[in-house]
Length: 189
Image (tube, rainbow, N blue to C red; front, side, top):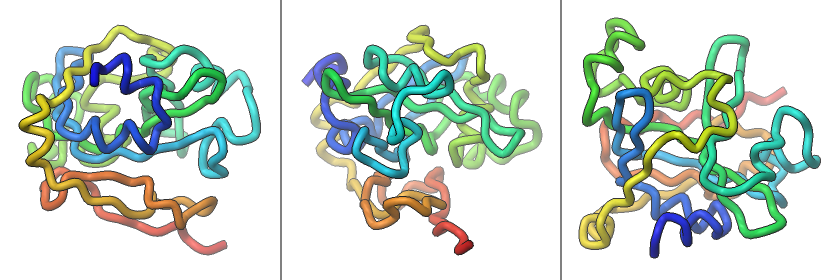
């Protein structure tokens, strides 16, 4: 399946197939090791309550980045994917920097190589993502070849820190990969 065909599927179908893919942006390339799916019928999604100025990109064409600012300090990004008429995205949670490591280190400070893109905020920082990139398609995604992807042990479980729909096993990661972030359940209110 091509990337274009993959991006018109529901996010929970697309996300595991993106594991091992190479994403290049801002002079840095990461091998994606952890992702989370968010769909239109998902109370955990920014698009669940309908279109707003903030989430409009999630309703637009697939293959763009939905970038948002969180906790007043971090930029995170979703790769927009969905069937026609439905918003959806895949949170880029973690990856291994495989090209442009010096650039990623400069952006991230004194982080160990394994931690450069471990977690969605760190990944966003390593790639140089900020709000000006919301809606961009100016990046490259190269899917892992089928023979490589078939050897990836895909693990799945609940999404990190999510209070709404926490039972959905829509977090996908490469089992045993050291760049995958630790699971943290949502804090109880």
